[in-house]
Amino acid sequence: MVTPRLVRTAPYLHFPNRLRLPMNLQKLETGNASFDHISHGGLPIGRTTLVAGSSGSAKTLFGAQFLALGIQLFDQPGVFVTFEEQVDDIRKHLRSFHWDIDTWEKEGKWIFVDAAPKEEIIIAVGDFDLSAFRIRLERAVMKCKAQRVVIDSIGSIFTQFHEETHTIRRELIQVALTLSRLNATSIITAERLEEYGNITRFGVEEFLTDNVVILRNVLHNEKRRRTIEILKFRGSDHEKGENPFTINPEKAIVIIPLSAMILKHTSSHERVTSGIPALDEMINGGFYKGSINLVSGAIGAGKTLLVANFINGIREKKERCLLMAFEESSEQLYRNASGWGIDFRQLEDEGLLKVICIYPEISSLEDHFINIQETVKNFKPDRIAIDSLSALSRASSDKGFREFIIAFTAYLKHEEITGLFTSNTPLLAGGTSDTEGNISPITDSIILLRYVEMSGEMQRSIAVLKMRGSKHDSSIRKFTITDEGANIGKHFEGISGILTGNPMLIKLE
Image (cartoon, rainbow, N blue to C red; front, side, top):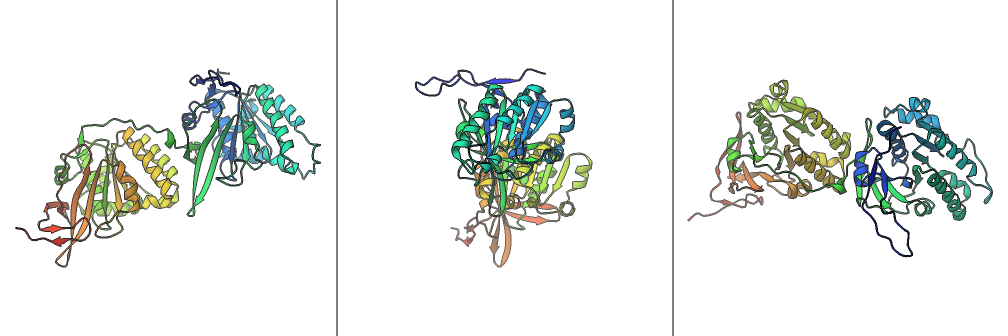
């Protein structure tokens, strides 16, 4: 057995007539890197953590992952106690995450304690206690020298106490004392009845444990969103607020630690081409490497054409590009690009381009984010194009989408990947969409594509609204789409109100 990896937090002061906090609180890494990040090192060693959540919030999986990663990464044995589900059902469920529970049981590294009632039991108030269970728990811990214990879910047995708070409190204290005496780092799960109400059903568990973690599975506008929040870590600091998470078939619970993100990344002076020489001229030599760039326009204004040229620009330095398309199929993209003289298939054959087309509603934004990270890790692109963010925003609430954008752009900047995103405006002549409002403050450049009605004819325009850290052309130029692709002409003369959607001829002196 290897020595546990400990993390020491900063010293804490002593306060008179209050709980004495340890000067050097030691923590045990859970093995879930994101949770260890937001918890500033893991779970306090030898203490009990309450994990509360409504039905379906992944409480059981959170506990099982804690045990599985302890065995896989640190060779630390564990005990899993079930008060609700049958052991065979839990085994079957956990095998789907490629955890070799059967082998671990044979090796004595994982022990199940089945405390689930086998039949309806009528208990007289005051006659029931958990002394027999505590003896079984202690034997299991000592048998495998367990350093990790999960009790799932102890609240289910309390329903037979007729909600006698005194009895529940008494028995919980005894269980907590047993775990503390065994020096086991423990998780106890408990059910809550609402996402933002009382922490637990009986309202006493949270006062008898050292730490409280809340899992949520909120339904908003017919869309589910999972989050995790560390509510209390007695004697230790931690990141505050909710962080989204998803359940991945390969990695189980994957947390996106938004609250722990640091606004710190490199800023390159190197320029990369947009694929259109005239646009490079407008933005003073091209996009900055590792920058986030937005193309905003109505349907048919030429956004995908700019994306195609951005992708074609990788030929200049033999870069790699990942294209995530959420509105068009790959065959449609290939056809459109070839019509502009750009061969996506050849770029793919050369290993310079990877195209992924998927409906945004198929997965949550958290799943999309994790999948993109995996693709980036394997493909190692220099550029990423997203067409379009407006389609992707349909897969989440406004809050969830904003958090996705923050996490995604921070990730791209950290990896120094140049990004080009498209966003649809609600009106043909302009306007700002909710999607654009969410991302525009954190973009490095914004390019506007607008329609202009001139003498009964619809014309297109292009303008650079923003170019962070660089001068740029402030004129509104004519933009046409030909068989050769994009063509940027001279600026409009004698016209005002183009960007507001109300072009007017003005008299030139």
